[in-house]
Amino acid sequence: MKKILYIIPVLSLILTSCSGSKNTYNALTSYASDVKNSDNELITLFDSSISLTTYNKLDYKKLESLFNDTIQYEHKLFDRYNYYKDGEELINNLKVINDNYATGKKISVDDDLFELLSDSIKITKLSDGYFNPSLGALIDLYSSKLSPLGLTSSNPSDEEINRALTCSTSLNNIEEIIVLDSNDKTVTFNRLDGCNDKVIISLGGIAKGYAIEKMASMISETPSIVDGGRSSMVATSINPNPSRDTWNIAILEPNNKEILGAISVKGMVSFSTSGDYESYYFDNDGVRHHHILNPYSGKSENYYRSISLISTSNNAMMLDALSTSVFNLDSLDKIEDMINRFEEAFDSKIEYLIEVDEGNKVNLIVSEYFNDHLLKDTINYDYVNKIIVR
Amino acid sequence: MELKKNKVDYIIVGIVILFILIFVALYWINADSNGSDVNVYYNNKLVYTMNTSKDEIITLPKTKYSDLLADVVIEVNDGKVRIKDEESPYHYCSTLGYQSGKGSSLICAPNHVRVTIMSSEDSGYDYVPGGAK
Image 1 (cartoon, helix red, strand yellow):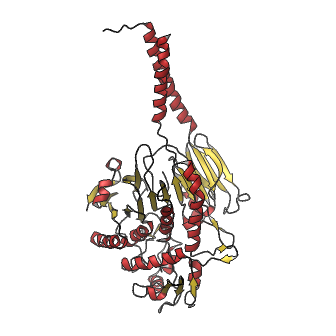
Image 2 (cartoon, helix red, strand yellow; image 1 turned 180 degrees about the vertical axis):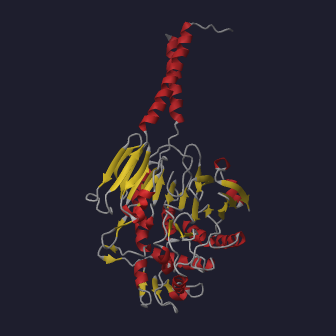
Image 3 (tube, chains in turn red, orange; image 1 turned 90 degrees about the vertical axis):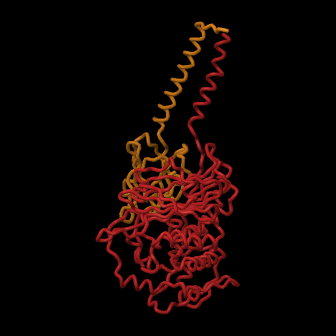
C-alpha cells in the first residue's frame, strides 16, 4: 500500500511538467478605436490598426483607455482629410492649416501639432530635403493607384508630376512657407511662388511614429509594445516573457511578406521599416512603383526592397522619417552618411538592415550591431541569399 | 546492496507509463479538436467569435453595423479564415484571401472590420510588421 502512495507525487510531477511544456504567454493587445469626424463618419486612425500589447491584466486595464485616448487625439491633430470637433469647437488640425494656405492667417495649434511641424522642418534640413512634409499634391497624384494588392495602373504624366513638384517646398524656402511662431504656438502657411495650385502639408511619413513615440514615452517603465500597425513600433522596458528577456522583432521578405529572420534586443527599442511592398502598383510596362516618393524626381526609386532601422531608445518618429528618406539614396555610403548625421542630431545610435534583390531571393546588408543581434537560427535561406556585414 | 523487485514495483511502473500515455494522448486530441478562436471585431469591438475547428459562414449586416460599406461575409473553412464577400475599393478585403496562422489578422479598414486568429502560444516573435504575432 505504501508503495502505491509513491505514485501520487510521481504522477503530480509528470502532470505538472507536462502542463508546463505548453509555453503560454498572455500578451494582451488593445486596438485603438476608430473616431468620428465632424460629419459623424467613422475614420480609421492613421489608416492603420494601431495597438498596445501589455503582459498582465492590471497593466492592460490601467493603460487601455490612456492608449486609446492618446492615439485618437494625435490622429485628429495630424489628419489632413477630416475635421474634428472638441465639443462644439472645431479642432485646429492639419486640415485647418491646409485650408489656410496663402490666407496669411496665424493659426493657433496644439503643442503636439506645433512640435511635429517643427520636427518635420528640422528633419527636412537634416535629410537634405529627402524627407519633405509638403508633398501632399504629389502624394494625391499617386494615392488612387497605390494599394497593398499591387494592381496595374498608368503612371501620372511628367507634366502632372512637375506641376505637383512646383507646389512642394524646398530645403531653402520651407521655413518661409511654413512659418512657426514658438511664442504663441501659431502656424502661418504662406503662398509659394511658382505654385499655381496649392501646397498641401502631409505628415504621413512621420505622424504615426510621433504618436506611438508619445504613447511609449508615457509608459516607458511598463513592459509593452506600441505597434504602429504596419511598419513601426516601440517596445518598452524588459520583455517579461518567462522564456527570454529580449524583444524578438521579425523581419519580412518583400515578395510574400514571410518572416525571413529576426533580431533580438533587450530593453527599450524603436523599430521602423520601409518597403516597396507595402503600397504599390505596376505600370503598363510592368515596372513597380511604390508609396515612398523621391521629393526631387516625384517618383519612387527601386534601389532597395526594404530598409529597417533600429534604435535602442524611444525614437519612432525620427526612424519613420529617416527610413523614408534613405530609401531615396542611391548608395550605401550616402545612407550611412545620413544615418550618422541623424545619430548626432538625435544623440542616438541607429542600426540598419537593407534588403536588395538577388535573383529570386534577397541579400541582407546589415550594420555590425544589427548583425550581432540577428537571431541566426531564424534566418530562412529560402528567402535569403547571403548576409553582408558593413 | 541489491534492490529486490517484486510484483508491486512492476504494477507501479505500469500505472505510471499508462498515465503518461493517456495524458499525452488527451493533450494532443484536445489541442487538435479545440482549434483556435477567431475573433471578429467591428470598430475594435468584439462582435462574434468563430473557431477554426468548425466550418462556418457568418454575415455582418450593414443594417446592424452602419459604418460597413455593405454586408461583410466571413468564412471559416478547413481551419482557414477569409473575408468572403464585402464592398471596398478593388474588393481589397476579400482579395486578402485565407489566413491560418495563429495570431494573424485580416484587416478590412474600409469596413472597420478586423478578424484575428487568437493564440496564447509564444510564436518566438514579439513583433511582426503587419500585425501577425
